[in-house]
Image (cartoon, rainbow, N blue to C red; front, side, top):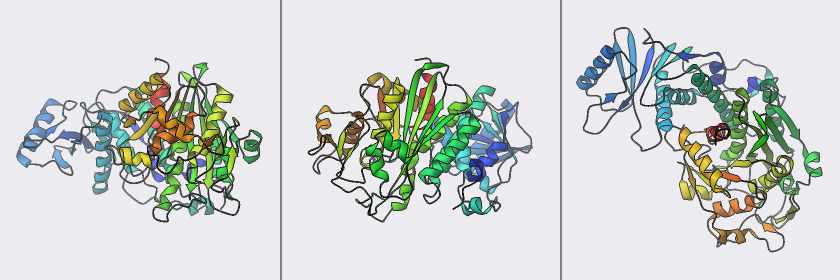
Length: 507
């Protein structure tokens, strides 16, 4: 397949819409526009609209209409008052964070826009952050249904679909700087989600590297791509073992955004398995198509770097992406093979479907050796076991450093990306020790707590560097948390990593 001419040509309709969208603060109500208003609907009580940002007379008329219309709070309620249209949407009753509830309002609003054709939308909120609602609106309007062959053949993309507004205004307590930051975050989320949803026959490791390099050149991000020979010279035998069975050769992508204090460094490491068949330890056929999402950690890191490039972070941030495809063939790594990581640790590969930790082992070694960072955060769809622990409503966090874990947890709470810390029980560390090598990539069959033992495996490669591991296997796609699209990609982890990188200047 021919390469696309530009990374922008790979982006869906929503990204091109966002590129042209007028997003600004509103001075008041706008005639003929659709005004989105969050509304609390408690059982046995009349709905209460969040009208604090609205003129008093308009607020009174909305409240009166709610009393008389007997709306039950489901699906949204449309009101027309004079020349103003109001879409009242119920706030989630689940006890989640305010950013999640705000994004859910935006997602619900996007779903209703299919019923209307408004060129102008005004988000009106005070109890919830109107910018979180905008974030959800963009996520809800995102649509990846376009033909990738048009990229190769030069055809025009299909622009049919929901009528997208040309202008969105924010009526609430926001500054122009906050609006701009939210806009840039929405762009970064779209980049990450596009990569996640891309089919694996298009998004190979090589194309992920090409895409990253093109984005980096436009955003003034320093970029370096290491190919198979360079990885071999570095001694990354663990990483390369995962790639052996595929005709698509691996790439390690290195992105760097200079911080205000270049002496301090943070590394964000992302698992970028563009397709995971399981290798010789082949996965069952049912659901294997979802394994295109096994690069979701990499997508979140790339998106985070794009966002950080727009406004200089306090510290220098390095994004490391291990892009690789895990396939079975006569050349593939076998169960029982022993490979050697960059730090000379020998690893017995007992299961080739536990490949993410083999990739990240060498990526983490590279981070420690070449950057000596003050903090490493890795994000990966690492274990199916994390779903048994936390389901699809939150991701697992494990760390070797209490202060770093607290910082990430605090940041995740602020941005509405639910995390739960799992303990690194010291008794489980010994379960990663190998019989015929230093380590083994899975534990004995009777050992449980596979999410924790996988983290212990990774911990071996960070030395004493403060490190936080995020296992997002349950939240990277088809996330069931409030404020996330129920199907497909969601860029989970991006907002948290961005918040952590910005907060380090004040911590």
